[in-house]
Image 1: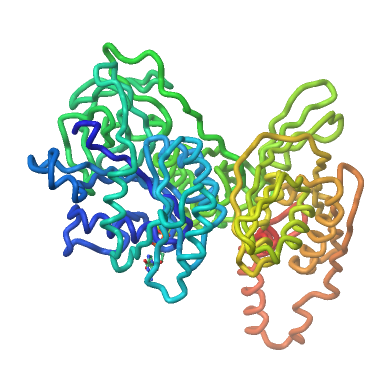
Image 2 (image 1 turned 180 degrees about the horizontal axis):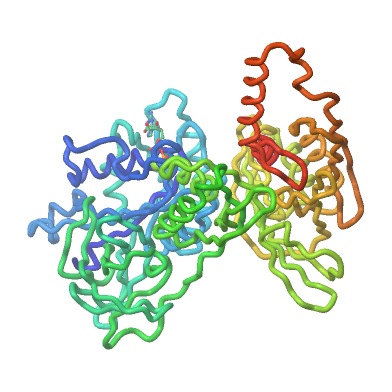
Length: 606
Ligand code: GDP
Ligand code: MG
C-alpha cells in the first residue's frame, strides 16, 4: 500500500475507559471481523488480561476504511480504501518503555476518556509520551450513552489539556457504536500519513514480540524505510543476529501472509526463533545484504526495577518452578532470574521485574498456569552500595547488603504523577511526605481536579503506596510513575534473629529513620505467628550487632501428652499423628520450628 493511504494510530485510555470495546467496534464496523465471529474483547487474548481488564501485550490490526470523501473523487472510484493500522499499547506504568515504542510506530493517537470519569494519571502520562513523540492527538469521550456522562465538563477538561476547542472533542459510545464511524473518518483526516524513504536500505522498528507455541516468536514491526520481503535474510541491528524471514504479513485480525511490507506498513515477521530476547522491542531490523548502517533511535534494554525471591512452598517443586520460569521468559524479555538459596526458605530464585504489576502477573501465572504454590519475599529495589575502599556492590537481595565500611548508598527514584480531587490534596501530600517524597509541582486541571508531581524513592512506592493512596482518597486518586535515576540515601539493613540466628528471608533495607518501626512491627508479628517451642525463643531485630527491638516467645510448660491422663491410647496416638503432620509444614530455622504460614503471613504486605 502507498504510504499516502496508510494511517497508523493507537488508543490511549485508562483501564475500563473502553479501549477494548472501542477496538471491537472498529473491527466490526470496518468488516474485519464478521458479526458471527464477534466475541467481546476480541483483541485481549490472554486470560489474565481478560479477568483483570488490563492489556499486557500490544498487537496491531489492519483495517480498511473509506471516509465519505474517498467515495466521491480521488481513488475512491478505483476501490482503494485507506488502510488503518491500530496498534494496541499496554496500559500500565510497568510497561512505559513498551508503550513508548508502540507510540513511536504511530503518527496519531486517540485519547479515549470515559465521559463519566474524566482523565486519569496513567492516561495523562501516556498522553505526555504521545506529545513527546509528536503524535497527532484526537480527543474522544466514550460512554456518552451512560446517564452519568458529563460530556460538557470533561470535553472542557480535555480541551484545556491538549489545547483544542471543546467542540473538537469527539463523543462516542463504544458500546452502541454511536460516533465510531465518524471517529474513523477523523483518523483518516487528521492523522498524517507515514513518511519514509522507499529506496533506502530497509529499516523496521520492532514494537512488540510475542512467543507463540506453534510458530515461535512473532515479531511486530513498522517499516520506516525501504522494504522487507518474504524469504529475505535479515539482521537485528542491536545484536547482529541473522535470520531468514520464513513469513511476513499483516494481522486483520488473524495473521495473513504477504509478499512484503513497505514504507509505513505495520505487520509481523516470523523467523522461527523461539525466544523473544532474539527480537527485542525497540530494535531495528534491516536486510542482511545492503542493509542499513544506522539503526533507528530509541532502543533500550529492558531493565528490571523490582526484585523478589520466589520459593516453592513444597521444596520438591523446585525443578518445576525453574521450567515454568524458563517458559515464561520465552515470552517476556524483561523477566530475569537466577537461582538463590535461603537458609529459611530453601532453594528458589531471585527474580527481577519491571514493576509491581509485572511481579503480580508473573506470580499469578506461575500459580495458575503452572499449578505452583509459592512463597514470595517482600519486593525490593536495586541498591548501589559504595564502600569506603571505593568498591561498588549492586544489591538485589537485602540479605546480601554489605555490613560496615559503607561510604554511600544509592537507591532508585521515580517521578510520580498523581491525579486527585482537590479536597484530598492535603492527604496526598502527607502520604508522599511520609514516603520521603520531594514535591515537584502541582497543577489544577479544573476546579475540582489537581495533578501533583513528586520525586519518590521507588522502594517507598513498591511497598503498598498505591493502596494507601486509594484509601486516603476514597479510591479517587490515580497514580503513574516513571524511573528517573537514583539518589544517595541514609539506608540501613535490618536483620531479624530467631533464637540468635538470622532469618535471611526477613532482612530488609529501610531508611534509618524507619528502621526502628520496621523492627518493632516484624518482631511483634513473628511473636504472634510462631508457636511456643520447648525452650524460650528470643525474637530480635538488629542493625549490624545493635538490637533495636525484642520480643520473647515463652517455652511450653509441659509435654502436650501430659494432657491425656495416661489411659486412652488411641487419643494419644491421634495426637502424635497430628503433631507429625504439623511438622511437615514446619521449617527449621536454626533450632526453631517456624510454620510455613508464618513466612507467608509475615511476607504478605498487609
Ligand atoms: P478497557 O479496560 O479500556 O479495555 O475497557 P473495556 O473495553 O474493557 O470496557 C470497560 C467496561 O466499560 C466494560 O464493562 C464495557 O462494557 C464498558 N463500556 C465500554 N464502552 C462503553 C460505552 O460506550 N458505554 C457503556 N455504557 N459502557 C461501555
Ligand atoms: Mg482492555
